Image (tube, rainbow, N blue to C red):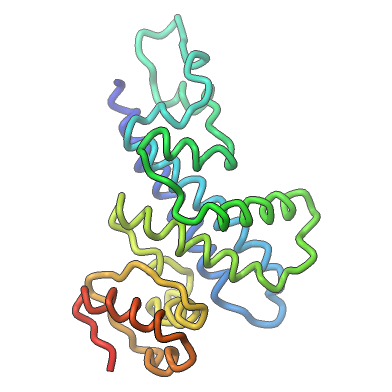
Length: 226
């Protein structure tokens, strides 16, 4: 394998993190005039998911993400360069990624029903025909990011999704608060701490089962609920 090809997973991962950063921001924050963020969070989440899955598959072998391997053959070159792959290669479409992930790694998408719902919403938005009920797009996005992507990227790259958002003036407090209110679990960083929100207050309206599950995750990192 050409040494340059080994850079493919890392290159994909960096772009995926950028898309995750925007998806978190658009799904969590809301002010008047930001109505379009409902659509953008879906598009950015889908892009992040597509790239994260391809980065995971590319860790197994960089060329597994390409669906036209034989077309990459170039008789004029003795070696397969990354530039040639970028120019000539065609990767798998979004809808094929759950099967590609399973075939390449033996892993399943954790929440396939949510994956399909986000895929349909993404397709509708891209074709200028957004879903009639747009109230749930932010929730749909967060479920996709934290039920599907967060477990995968934490396992494969040690990445905690809550740490990536665009509000650089604060930590991930408001992301965590939004997830708690929606009763969504998340990967916990080793140095987890909150300074802007009261976690007990955020937990006041959640189910007991969610509180127990979150307390277990936080406890594993040395963070105790009252």
